[in-house]
Length: 186
Image 1 (cartoon, one colour):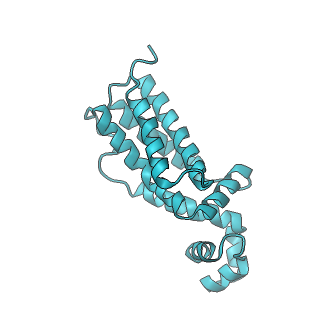
Image 2 (cartoon, helix red, strand yellow):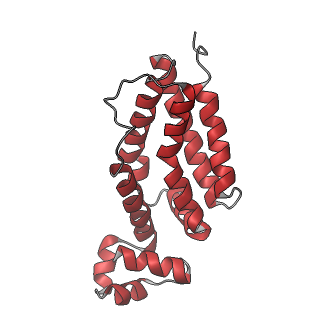
């Protein structure tokens, strides 16, 4: 059902797609689609499902148990690799990303991205930064700084004010500021 909704949203546009079309395409009843929610709820579920799959499918250098010290440049590359897939996804379809952002800002539908996944990403970022010369306090503050910059950049990409390349470049600047900013809390 979600794949039908996503395909129709991307092909016809969010505003032009109807619950009835989604039900027909998914070969389910309109009531079955409505059990998930309205179009806004479907859109949040589409984004959340994709974001959760990427987040949970990560392997390799982002594992929290790794305490190997990281030079600032290596940490910056790993932080960027954590969020770049999401920036790319938001840049794929600006109209759909705008609609998603609008639903989130209205607060009418809860998103896992701003709950459990937010905490998981913050934990990953902090674990990475803790492997740099930053103090524990700085790693926590840096993780929050990166997370909120990331959200702002996603919303800016969704608004069409930044393209994917500019978004990645600007986030790279924020990462560089954070990982090279040791000693600011002393």
